[in-house]
Image (cartoon, rainbow, N blue to C red; front, top):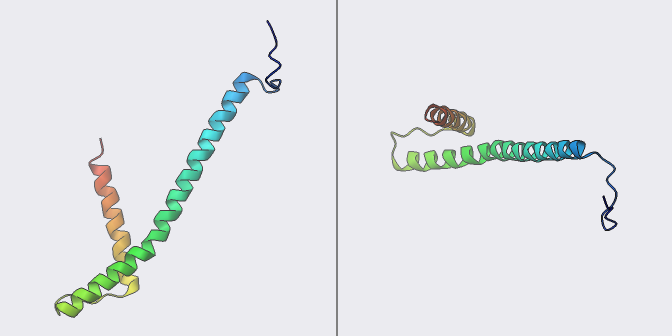
Length: 93
């Protein structure tokens, strides 16, 4: 068996190196999951503000549509997101 001098010597056993690569994959997946959670949580106030503006515009055009505040619109957005998640889970394979 010949030694390849162009590569640095392997100080970590191959099985441990494979385990480290799995850890790196898990760490990258965890970071992506955390970033997705942060984006979803930060999107809730923006969605609620847009819903409040739309409901205010509809209230201005049609008196039968109630005007809602920011807190109510946040609760509506959370409820709609939960309903969408349950529906998606219901029709998943």
